[in-house]
Image (cartoon, rainbow, N blue to C red; front, side):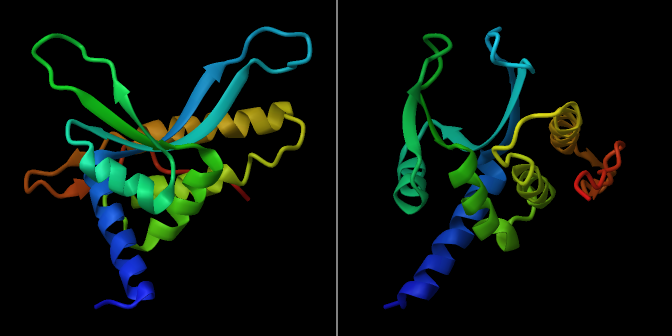
Length: 166
């Protein structure tokens, strides 16, 4: 029988591999409702999620890291029922940090997510911080578009990853 530390390491490695293929590390942007107390209308958040037809791995992720599993609406009659597991910002950052050594495909996205989380300090939003959040949002989007050479080996993205936090 595995000791608990080794077992936890195994589960984290499994989860990182699963999320490398089936998961999403995303920075979301949405417009806030226009209210007088909001000086800026854009809000940014971090989310770690995975969706698929078989809920079993998603339930396992939830039992390891928390978060919720929900049923997604079906597109048409021909599509199978889909399920989604997700974690919001604070929990997502902790889990991403724990999985970072095991990520391969999403390693750059994970590093960017960790850097992005440092911007969300609870301090008042300034024009400068809003610009940095937008830059992180655009950089994360660019990391999701990977070019491959003729041997199916990933090549550097056309948009160079910027060091966004000094």
